[in-house]
Length: 247
Image (cartoon, rainbow, N blue to C red; front, side, top):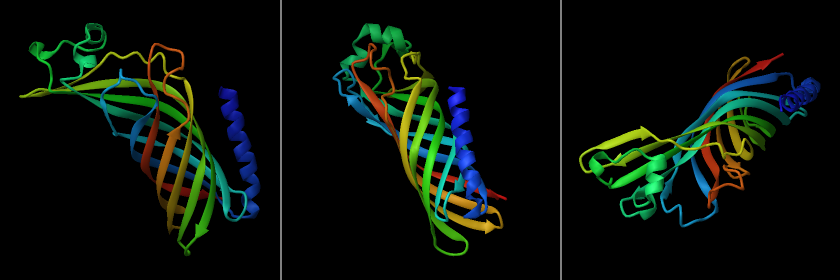
């Protein structure tokens, strides 16, 4: 896996090094992207009756780009990604509260044996992501331009966490839950689409803001496991950062 990643980055840099005749400048960007992510079911099941909601997440990392013509560029990078979703259950959901093996296996004891009016699960999945970027630049003025990007990314699963929030009449409690993430797909892939607005505010330094949509191509969990449903993660966010042009 390491050899494949290093070979991929080497090819990108080799091709990029030939781009100086068109536009001088290898660009290194650093960014932070707050986003909302949610799930789309691959197989729907009566065993997942909760009301799904978007979850706040983020990604942050480095991005490397260079032009192969005056307007077309390619790039790569590396980023740390947090995606997930929320599921909320009411006190009438039998699957959650009336199934002893589930309660004993995953959830702590209820407070004073009371059933919460609402229980929300917060699922977080953490990935190391390496994208292959293709883009087109549209010059607007001397200091402003727009770029349109698309590509595919490789997502390596690092770990996952689950938190539970129980809402009672007089209080709300939040605590971590024991959840088995061993059945997660170790390697996933995602498609992305975005558009930058770039402002060159000082010589080689450029500020940028980029709305971006990501869709994971593979289900989160392995196909042959004990689960009767599966899902993929989608996210929508705004990437904000700064680029530095070299050479």
